[in-house]
Image (cartoon, rainbow, N blue to C red; front, side, top):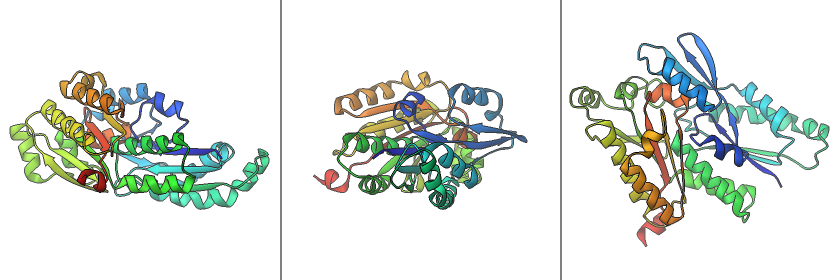
Length: 316
């Protein structure tokens, strides 16, 4: 049985990983100052958007998932003939329309897939499930890594994998740092509401205190306020290093940066995390942050995520 995984453009994984694992990306739609782009996780195009448009606070910028009709067309023309089962892992439904629109599209897909499969001379049925990752950026990515690890192991069927990934979503910890907290204060994780308090916005301006936002199970909170961006990133990286060291919950760490990833690689805290991950046999993936989330978090934003240990592991 061929099982495929589909993600949205806000899932921050390197192109090489997506390609080698056959993961299909559903594009997002960016609207900046009246112009429209598709975000398909093209690194060069993303960097060009960073340089020319995203950094401008005065720009009117918005990102949204592609429509249900477009999602249905992608599946019916490109995917239902290649797979018997597909798992769509979406960005947190609280901050993205992808979960709702992919779920809506699934009804049309399941009504019309037979004729497509018969035309391609494919026997057997087809099933599609849409899963809310309850996270964004690197948080989506680490959950996808978990799904791919389960698929490669070959020990579980499709429904068992779906249940395991759904359970893991509640243990996904994602930390985000905005280089310019103005974006967190004016656009936030959903592009509309502030993700930090008015006091944190004042602190960021007056004292350069950078909020470290934790997102877990679809809820977010500020967990630290270091002085300066590098210190905030170091705090997030240290929390990730400590997190993967507890129990057996982590087999992957995902990171993303709204710019050249070499900025993060050169940080001592990243190098320490990398060494810890290597010692634990955990995958580590660093990618360019999607333009979809960068229009909300701003250029130079950083995210890191891992799977927290299950309670039984952490209590052992």
